[in-house]
Length: 148
Image 1 (cartoon, rainbow, N blue to C red):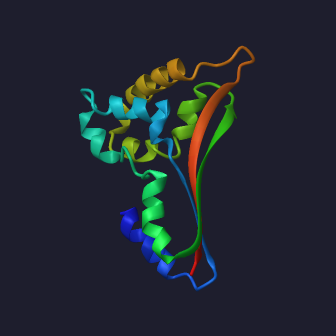
Image 2: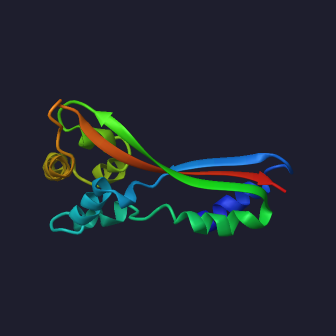
């Protein structure tokens, strides 16, 4: 409910002061697209409710919601390139974020199979480079708004 939440938060800011927000916008990258596809396949379809496929809106939507209250509004996206190492580096990267609610919905006896399938697909999408490193592009949305 960002269209409600962010204007509400901005109303709490004193005139002349700032609201600064940053959010991942990873749902556009293969890491998340692979996960979204997997939870639509049998036998994993019961997991579809555990994830939000598009939790962050296009930057222009945030402009529409915040600009009426803003003296200044700056919105941009940055794609970081994370250098990962080790076995299943991308799978391990997301184990503490988007995978948490998915795994919480699975019986422990089924988690290993799910992680194996997802991990194999991630390895195909994010192969290790000749030096052993894996590159993970990671998109983030930033907003800085000054209250009128």
